[in-house]
Image 1 (cartoon, rainbow, N blue to C red):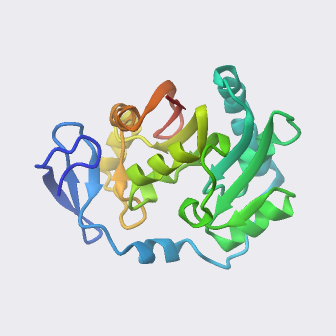
Image 2: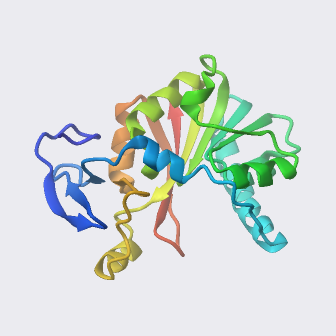
Image 3: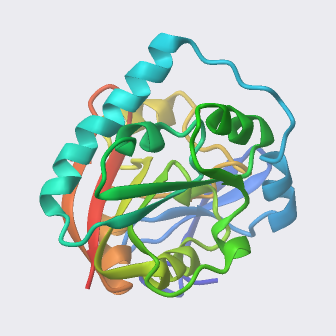
Length: 238
């Protein structure tokens, strides 16, 4: 067992959470679950037929958040074209880029109910994962993942695949729970922060930057959200 980010061979055992062992790398401070649960058990948990209902206000609010971020992202974009939204949920990034000729949206979602909801909005969304699609090299100008990376068995491999399908100088946008956020410390004290087998990795702003740099991305913009302990990062493929 070694750290997925910095390859330190001696992570420290912290405690058990919901029957799973949580470890910490003393070097980059990545917290993670080890051993990982079977990958199919995690994947199957997200493949439901459950219908999704959302109020018009919630849909407006979440799409507005993506539109606000898109304005900041557009100032950094050097190339335009197809957008790939991995784990797109109800398709809020699709609503944000809708009608903008410089972007063409595609969403991927495992959850059947969420996928159907996004499709009912008229968005180009298919049920599946990045690994299942076999996209050509350099197919996309922008890839987004909102609260996906912490669920994956192989975040490093997924980011390498994202790099493969991104155009040169393309952008990746990630949002994850922030292990270094002041509010996450309060949740830790309350025993409400670590949540395997759903959440397997617990990133901080610093070690997420380190991972991106190691895989050939340059972080350009990084912000902690105020109301919730999250961080979102925009990085460019070198």
